[in-house]
Length: 275
Image 1 (spheres, rainbow, N blue to C red):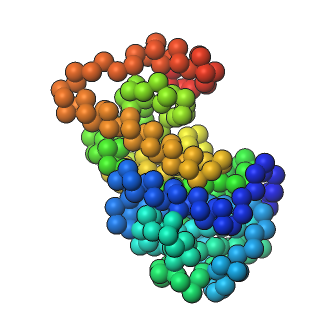
Image 2: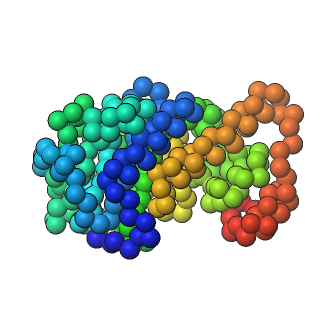
């Protein structure tokens, strides 16, 4: 367990931020029906029994020894992200990993409206375990969403290349190179929830803070806040929307040149592979 974090949000504050994030993801049409999921790792002992009094033992989809002592807040399968803000106990579970790193206790509320954790729990858990093991983060938020323009571009062969995609979606707003300095890692299509999807996503989020799951959606991480992870999705989706508009218009727009992007990066002291 790592408790070295400048701000240690309470359980209530974290649930509120998950609700805010879920609402925003829905506002940008990136979480239709039950699509999308959120998890947050708190690397310190957090009291959860007052809001989640029902305990259930579960087996983890992968070993997570570095998460022992912390708390994971995870959305349930099929829950609508837009509903978290109104009733977080119905949509979220708290997971505490046992000392063996292979099993956990899942705490839920009597208001629970899901049978199991999100079907992408293995990808969430894998990212948290990898980031805590490699970087020692004490807080991390992970958000999966299905923004339509990014997802559409991932169906076009040219955009299935990481460099091509980043060169094209980071050229529409000066803020993009600042907010998405490391860009987006593009992954091929994998069956959702599969071990191959999980492994590729964990590897992709080591260097980047957002991955594009081919023909599926995105996952973003942040060790600052849940809303910061959503901001990354929103910036990437906005760039993809401009790119889609340009495609539809017949490639009429110039976009920012590489020299203009580089000048923004220099001004804001941004180190990026895309300048």
